[in-house]
Length: 99
Image 1 (cartoon, rainbow, N blue to C red):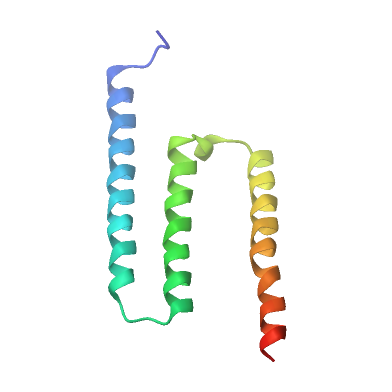
Image 2 (image 1 turned 90 degrees about the vertical axis):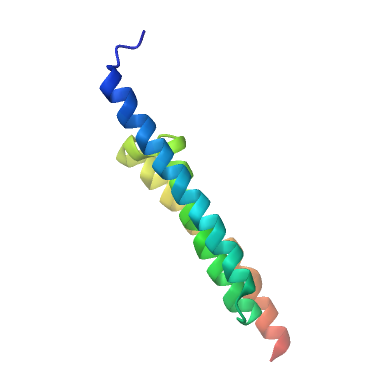
């Protein structure tokens, strides 16, 4: 055995259940956003914001990244910066075509 006490296992299980409930609620919020009368850009932006929160919860708790060292966080932040740049880069070309 890995030496975990029963109390530690219960605490970890409780955290996993709370994260699951948060993910379920955020999924319902995402579905609720689809019924709001928002512009397409606002609806997609809000849905992506909620999805990023859900992804952060999954990465932090289920992938155990919440207890990692600073180097891992630095690599993740750099990856996120490149991801955002790759998402936003095509928007510049799209807006150039409109103008």
